[in-house]
Amino acid sequence: PTGTLTYSGDNRWIGGADAGSLWTMNLYFTTPTDFTTNTTTALLEMSTNSNFGSQFNIYGAPTFHNLTMTRGAGTTGNTTLNLQGNTVTVNNTFTDSMQGVAGWYGIINNGTIDCKGAVNMSAGNYYQYGTGVIRMSGSADSALTPPPTYVAGLLYPLVVAKDAGKKVTVSTSPWRAGRAGSYVTVASGMLDLAGLDLATNGALTVTDSLRLQGGETVTRGSLDLQAGSTVEYTGAGTYTSFPAGLGNSYRNLTISGSGSWTPAAAVTVAEDLGMSAGTYVVDSTRSLTVTGGTALSGTATLQLAAGSTLGIGDGSTLTSAVGSTFRVAGTAGSPAVIKNENDGAGFCEITLSGVVDVSHAEIRH
View: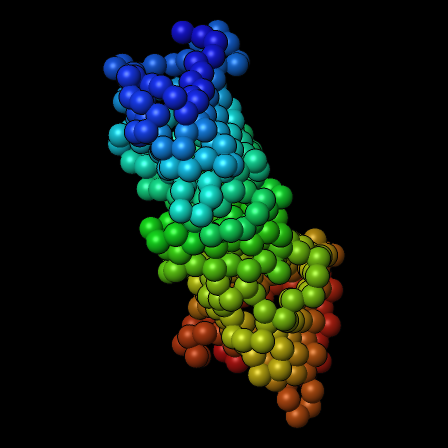
């Protein structure tokens, strides 16, 4: 099948029910149904202005090129899309323009909308929620545009499952999912906050990559930066801390922005630290401990202040490429310490090809 399947209700009749009752529309896809064959405009559009509530039930696992949900701003009664435990695939754009009001919501429940393109909620608002998962997958970069006005902080669980090397970029407005049961998972690919805040009532789980500038506010329940995960900072500002919601313990940490980072706390990196730009200052009495390798490249600068400590993992390396800088700014009475984390029982290798500027360093085996 090709073309457009549209249901646009008014507040009078559907399936014999009168205007004083809940509307229900059942859409049955008894076998896997692909509405995108031979067309790039296949569209399922569900809209309602009912003042008594409406429910759309989808049975089966259809694929659409575009999927659109709308709801009138003055509508009372909930508007519900019940996926009946199924996954609906959207090859291009999922547009969610549901406008809820206090006490009456747009709801997506019981399944997954798997979108391989953009998710655009720019014409909706935050009066919507549900157990339905918004999953962003596919082999191309795409944008996630949340509602523009923060109202109640509801929204849905969000899963990023892009192919390797592909990303979802948050656009225009923050993602704020404050409803109990919400969560954000970066299973594969990258979630790029691009300077916008991120909030979830539940777990923030990163299996692959999370990118942010550094000044964003990250609010979450629990945090799980899994083995092999990377958090990347791209900002150009001056930062005295990492976002509180991410803290100071990472698996892999990457700094690629031109800004300056001077965390007022000890920072630990369980795997590797990579810097291709910017300046990281380990401040006085603070420490930076990297269990894996530390690699400086591009225009990056790693600086140890007087009284600071750089810990290098047993058997690991500290390297700098031409163009980068490794600077030790200790004093006679307060040298900077570079030490192997195995406290004398192991070894580490330091190979510096970039600029080396050392004053009063104490190197401990």
